Length: 115
Image (cartoon, rainbow, N blue to C red):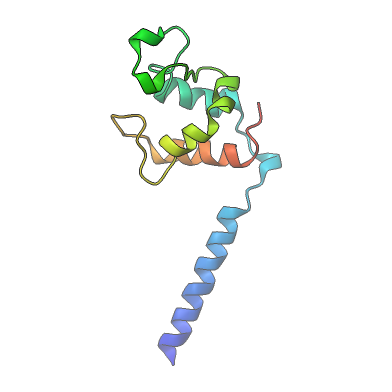
């Protein structure tokens, strides 16, 4: 019986944690494009995905993908989520995305990507 109670308490605790993670306080979230999205893109993406890089100098799948502006971010949001924020990211190819930066970017996206 005691193990059943422990299991119930654990499940209730985990459910509460999930609820806390899911309910972001977007109104008070301090992150903006300037202090979150732009920094992430400039640090991890724009060295290969920038308008100053000619298409002939890019991988064929990378042509026209520019991530140094808010509009470029918005235009490529689905691609960014697929390639950099998935459970098995393929971008950047060298890997190494810091978990705290990825989580901050995810939360900023979930809160509507305020500029």
